[in-house]
Image 1: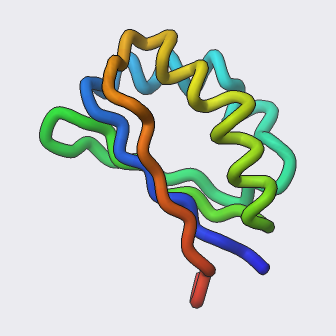
Image 2: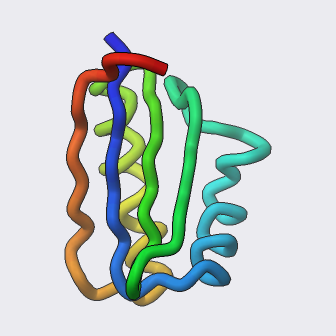
Length: 89
């Protein structure tokens, strides 16, 4: 079942976000199970919404790649996210 991954990354501006996305190669080599990635600028954060084929694929990406990439950008606050079943796309 497809899921939605919501992430708010505090302390991150759009320039550092763009660098992080380039390092993760999300555009050229998306991770297995990724369907769509959307980001917006929030107050003192970047907000990300992603659609994944499965919960396992989303969690694997967060734990194996995203946490480290966020930390490498100097974000000190722990990464918080939530995964919900997708209802409509």
